Length: 328
Image (cartoon, rainbow, N blue to C red; front, side):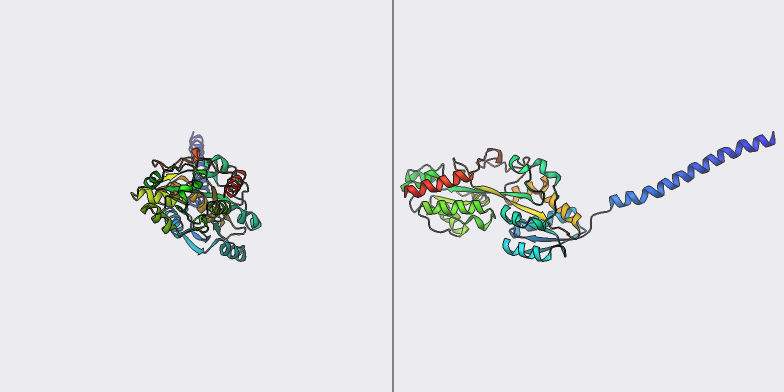
């Protein structure tokens, strides 16, 4: 009986020991994994940017609120210099290129690594199917008409379209700002510049001059970048933002991750963040920039939703400028 009692006691002890050993091994294996998964992102990130300083500052400030352990360094210049520097440093410091038109990214696509942000599924339809995973649309740019309705009414003109701007009553009463001052979209700049020539406006004026001249009633219409028009309207000025009936000149600026980028994961985090809803809504609310996302809009009276905007295609742009030229 004594032997049986001894055996009966040893077996559960062995089972308990084995159970404890297994739990210990399991915990030893899992704890580093959990710790690794919860470790905050850190390190550095190099940005090559042709974006306006206010836009870049908002991006970095909001990003660092979420990822305070990532140090962001910036090279800021015009688009040509940005791409030249990025090419010179690709594979050395690497990083993310911010801003620039589609042509610039196409011509340098060998510099970039393929990455499709998970936010792409929320982009507007025409931008959701990213043409090349090496570059991603980050903002839409629109040319709008800023109209002093009091002066337009006095002149007997109803401004609703590009075509309406050729009315003789508006001769000498239309000014425009160079779209390139805040938009990298070359087709947009080309159209506005060529169209302006067809209504005898030979050269662009400074953005502040156009805005102030239309507000003061010196000019009836200003062809301006949309964010400037919204900003002026929100300031309380007696002006309207009009989207031409034929369609608006618009396009997108892009971003791309350089191949061989150091801290590539940080570059992906940044690209995901600036195409996410939080940042895109802040850019719309604070900077009045039009979002690439379907779930972000201005929510302002008189400002068209992107889904309701008609974009001019190449044929329409060419037709408008040709017709205007022929009418001179």
